[in-house]
Length: 503
Image (cartoon, rainbow, N blue to C red; front, side):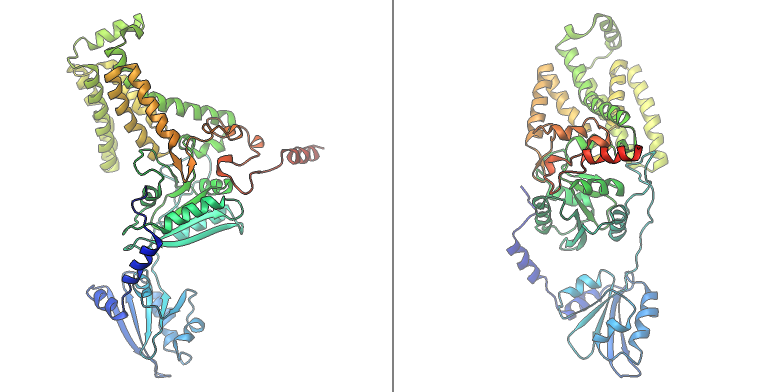
């Protein structure tokens, strides 16, 4: 099920094979123009030492203003004096030569004394990255306007500002035999289920892949079902949303270099819930959620129902609508299935073209291309104007999905429904729906049912699912998470406090 996983024994064996001596690392890295080594002699104590670093990874000001003056001072006698002399917190002294490659290529300066076998790794990394900006994918009109960036330390800072408590645990590890990417497992100790934490930690530690460039790599590797088109971990770029789900008992996975944080275990309902719903009145938020669910059903089923009705079930079409359909299709030589596939593929081409081209050009292509191609296909008699309207509405409805990964899945789902509608009409649509439900019933997120709280039914969890009830009624954390503290607050205590305030 997890093709990139391997046993711990094998993993340790590979680590031993990767051990390299200092001379080997220096010889290989010396082929690169940005690898430098400098030799010095302390004029006061006579101690000789060498510095090795990658010029494109370090900050030269730190090296020249903080490190070198201390190394060339009267107080520097041995490598053990570094901690007290150099004004840098991250200084590591080690004799393990297998650490050299990882530290050197992560922005550390290597100090090697001419006498002795110890090495010193001094943090001189040049921190480059963009500043915290507004969310681009999960933008909201109301609420905070902060989004994660590519720097892992900054992302952890954003979450800690939302949850300034000692229970917030950050467990870091390096994943990727080539990239050694920093990955942080984030959860609340004493609240998150220990079994969930162990599952995620074991899966992360068992990853055997050479490069981890983004959190999406992690999501695909540790997913319960790698062959499912449905995402099994929710990704978010909003610190407030991540802090909120951590307070529910969920687990976050942060990856250095990725502005998106993975959240799990998750449910299918969460992919249709925007975090802005919690900033609005519960009645308005519930209405918007139901609109999204209807939009998804409409986007997937409207075109297959059109094909099924015109191919097998003419009697289902109202008499008043029959004349309109006949008029719109009287000059169309193609059967409904080819007509629908032509328009669906055209919409997908326009989406891809708009996404891959530069922003301004992509918007122009999407708008002008849709109008020109749609009008020309109707006038040329390739498609009917009724189907053109339905396909356009279906494409518009698919955009209401708040999570981009799920919107891609919705785009793909309508094609198998189209094929089954052509084969067996409405019976084919029902059969395809049964296959879809069978797949979702056995699909899990970190071992938890993805259809919860609908199946298995959790009546208390329905308070924040397809609809959202007021906060004073959401006294319990989600039951499917099996948190160590399922109770959020006592409703009786809240009523008593409110009564005392009113009096």
